[in-house]
Length: 72
Image 1 (cartoon, one colour):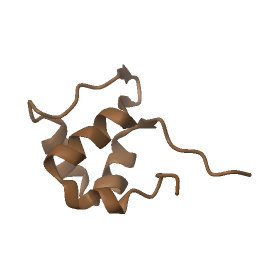
Image 2 (cartoon, helix red, strand yellow; image 1 turned 135 degrees about the vertical axis):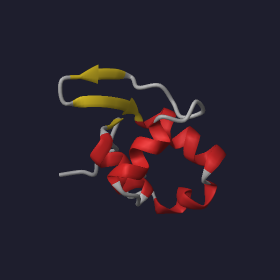
Image 3 (cartoon, one colour; image 1 turned 30 degrees about the vertical axis):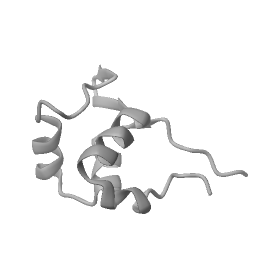
Image 4 (tube, helix red, strand yellow; image 1 turned 60 degrees about the horizontal axis):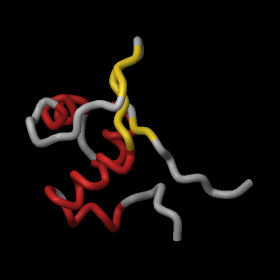
């Protein structure tokens, strides 16, 4: 089975991608410069990966090399 790049992030995926706690994710997504959720579901908000990765590039560029879902 080939490696597939994730297209959406939920809160747990944000925690894993950013390497932060649940509390810190809540703080980050409340920031006015953090991307708006793509959709809000019963289980919580979801974000487009490309929006989050763009935010990371602008605000935490040192984490770009840490993307586990990026294709080689």
